[in-house]
Length: 134
Image (tube, rainbow, N blue to C red; front, top):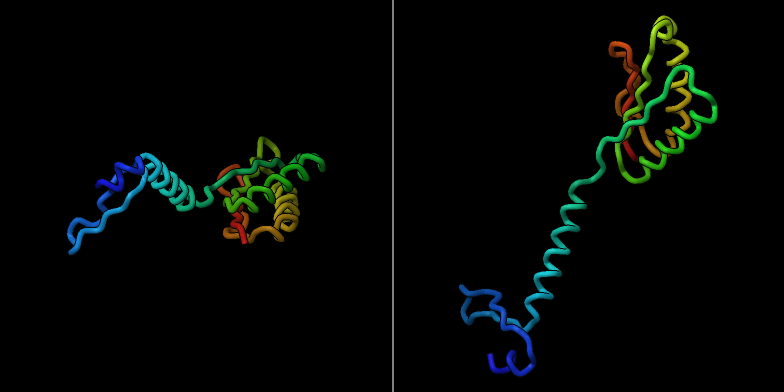
């Protein structure tokens, strides 16, 4: 205790139950800060990648499709799962083969960064596919 007071630090008991008891001379505020920082990093690491969504349509322009492809690749690089959604409106619902071709082109362009978890499925008026990072 004398040494800790002379140096201007705190005496921190590490293990009360052991024989002899273990103590450490350190700055308590700094120690608490470092522990909080480690805990925050551990929470961030355990969260992992969430599910992000990219929406496209059957009448999407070439440039817009390329922008969505780049965004999906970016998300996959950040270890997020990506859900690709294509919504059919009105008469577009009669021509789902056009949408499936665009979806296949999208998935083919993104395959180098991720893999297809769930192949494209049509549920209601939407066509869905789920990608996960490699």
